[in-house]
Length: 111
Length: 140
Image (cartoon, rainbow over all chains, first blue to last red; front, top):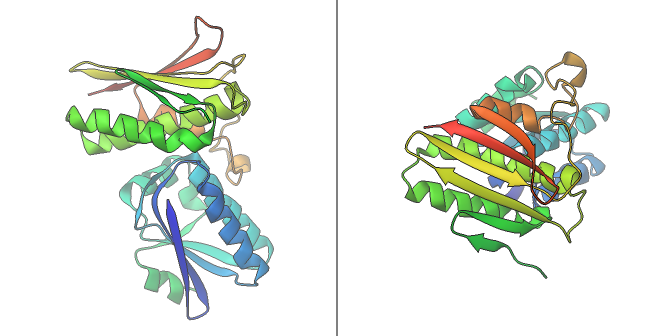
């Protein structure tokens, strides 16, 4: 997994690529999310369009980011959720927790 | 530093999440070359990653001197994968329901639930060497 991030209209866009399976690279996403919170960047979109798949570790990372952001008055939203990840969110009922958007632009405008 | 052992019917890795990508790459190559549907390969890749994570963290309790043994068997009708650790065993049924409203925001505890949704069968047994083995079966 590789991760890039950028800022657009005051919203941080995080773009992971590859597979989120729980290896050492997964801590990079966790650390980045918490780094942004420390920098007071509390509106975050995770663009999942280039994530091949994730497992429960990946879902745990998303939940960790979401709950930490919400506790500090921020919000984490998802964009470009692939069919496989959508099915994971559905079977785990996390679809009821996360706000998802078809595009990054729509997610940014929702803040 | 130990390295993964590549076998004709599987891969044995040191008990560390550093080697999750090796397992994924090994199985993807084997299943792709056998003509298995890409969506089935993804379901299995996610499931195996859950079982290997469990074997490393719960079975072997993150002891890198131990190993995780992953073997597969293919037939025209099904694919079987067995993941064995060298731990003292754990009860896969003894986990809280991850889709209970009270548990939805928990960061862990969804692995076996996801596996059950992606495969047709899941069986737990003791390995001859004393660890525990989890077998998953996917109908093709």
